[in-house]
Amino acid sequence: MASGKEIRTQIGSVKNTQKITRAMEMVAASKMRKAQDRMVASRPYADKMRTVISHLAHAHAEYKHSYLADREVKRVGMIIVSSDRGLCGGLNTNEFKVALQTVKEWRDRNVEVDACLIGQKSAGFFKRIGVNIVSQTTHLGDAPGLQDLIGAVKVMLEAFDEGKIDRLYIVFNEFVNTMMQKPTVEQLLPIRAGELDPELKHHWDYLYEPDAEQVLEQLLMRYVESLVYQSVVENIACEQAARMVAMKAASDNAGSLIEELQLAYNKARQAAITQELSEIVAGAAAV
Amino acid sequence: MSMTMHVDIVSAESEIYSGTVEAVFAPAAEGELGIMPRHAPLLTQLAPGEVRVRMPGGEEEFYFVSGGMIEIQPHTVTVLADIAVRAKSLDEAAARQAKERAEQAMKDRLSDGEYALAEAELAQAAAQLQTIRRLRQRQGRR
Image 1 (cartoon, each protein chain N blue to C red):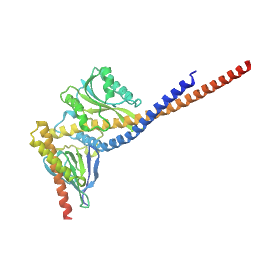
Image 2: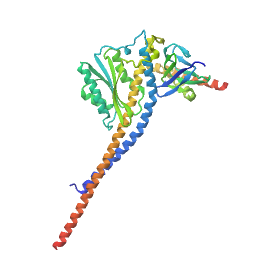
Image 3: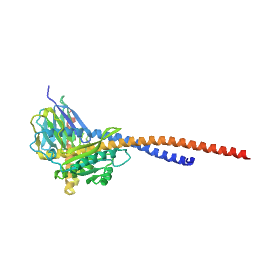
Image 4: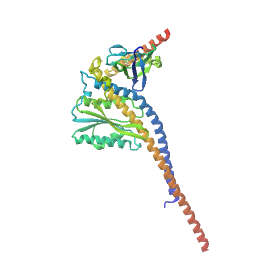
């Protein structure tokens, strides 16, 4: 059994760790609130954008933009959103599992995958896996701007325009609630028409000003950007929530560890005292 | 009863306005648009300027947009603004400063990319100033 002093230093170090995890938990909690606010604030835009796009997908347009047309899949692109930092439980691992599964499904069909990575963690992971990486962005911080993402996304959009990829997915964590984050794979391009609004069933098309090509180009570009932005913001909220939960678990574990060690320490101390006493008594008896 | 339609004004950062109105006036890329209910479906770009909505009571509200898109359906109008702010919260001094800065930048003969950026900034600042001026006039009249 460890001596009293050893146990005491062990308790000390566990206590220090607990202090750190508790501080991290509180930081994550306050950051999560802010991240959630940002997520909620940018949601109406993304939702409205989705509505407009779904109207558009149902319009009987003369001009068909390439983002709206399905084509044979020879190569797919994936945007994988992850956190920059670790210590957030299984958040990234679970997401990567889902991403890898999608990659595998495509590979089984002899379709190669190009990846665009957002966040340090995915950059590290997919480098090891051997997926073809076309672009990456890291160190976005807690409040990323749209302009931080445009570059990385543009590479994928250009690849789609040039026919290098025929489909584009985005993988991110969807924020369900503080305790639950759901890894999600969503198809960005080509845009899939959603539920049809019964009011719009008849044959119709938009008027476009100045012309269809220009308007659609701008609208669809913004659509993709807003979706990517929304995913990134959501992923950040997930990251903070997951970190908060993980750190809370760590603090609790440290607490029970300290209790156990304290018990062991007390036992060791008592054993030492008992032993000392019996030695003294035995010594006295011998005299 | 007069006809109304639903309007949503959203920017990338937040929802700005959502409600029922009689008419919407928006600065489209090809010129000012006046939209009444049962307008034909239309999709167009917005120039920097003010979006005006007229509520059923005849009262009007102003929003400044720095560009974006507008989608019109017979009974709904959606403004997807890049940046939208309530005209009341516009800061005249800041707008004037931005305008001066942009003009200065254009004078200094920049590269193509920077020039385009400065030009966009100038258009925005000018539109902001105009919105403020119009708001002032209207308040003065009351």
